[in-house]
Image 1 (cartoon, helix red, strand yellow):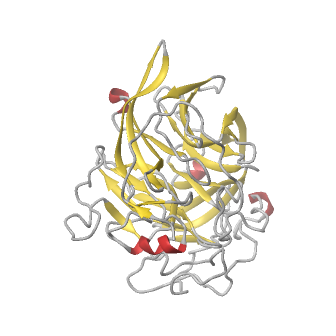
Image 2: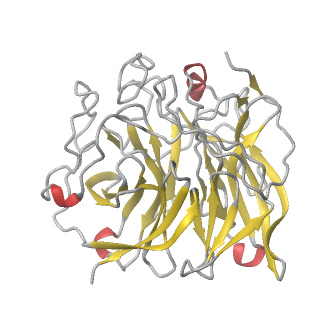
Image 3: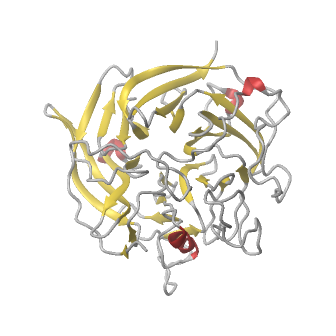
Length: 432
């Protein structure tokens, strides 16, 4: 059994890259270091399926499992879908994990190996940012998400989530720093760790992790349950940081109004629990948090995490374990445990996510745009009264690691090629 420890290492600065991630399939049969590798072809493009029918036509991995309510899976395609074009804005970048637009239109991107970069608006130049935190970068680990402070225009402060090396093992941590630029270049100053997922654990899987500020200025931090059978059960434990959504202040303390503050043997930073591996998170038009998490073989799911609620993992789940062994109680529903708003079987391999509220692509207004690693494109979920009414897919023939809406109203997608260790940034727009 791997050691679990609550001891955290001191944070050091790293300007240079570290060793490339290992890409071999895990012996457990669970998700690989590059997330969701299945012996099935990716989902077909939207043009292959008539409107009004589900875009997913592959056989389910768990055909005997039935949705809890109508529309919980395989929603139909909308009758009216935009013709989307895409072009590369930047190519040949190191393998990226996340991007964030600065007010001036440049892109701040995190590279999995541990480097941070500024990409020009037209993609013509890339500047390294010195001073990011030291990371573990093998398997699914690395420098993960990046978010701007709500007052970034004045403070220049950013937030980073990453796989932090610990004295025994590692874990998801959040650091903040000031982004400084001058004639000497770009660098991070006043770097400090404000939050650590505790305890640490010695593997390189299921870190989460997305960072989302709510409208009150609190920061949501999503984390995974570290994958292994011995750790996944702690997603149900309020004294453990595995498999949770946290809500913290910009300084890293438990945010006001958190549901478990003051409860004995509970981490006060926890917002919701019973999660597997959340790599997608975004606020909707009402300012509410939505997430998509990697499920087992046929169990990716969309949730709207609410304060104090339990989302079931690993007691209940859709899909099957990659090892072939039963998961939890082997059921998909149980009293007191939340049902996903939507789930995918087979999986799409979700990553970055954004709520589209622009006018440039009116057909998508009010929809969630989700990066698909396995589905190799964009997944578009149209919502109606907090349920998925329609689903469409935009095939991009590449693993999509993050999705953002640019200052120009276009959609930008980060691709990744783990074998080559490279990424591109694509700009998606409506044809014509």
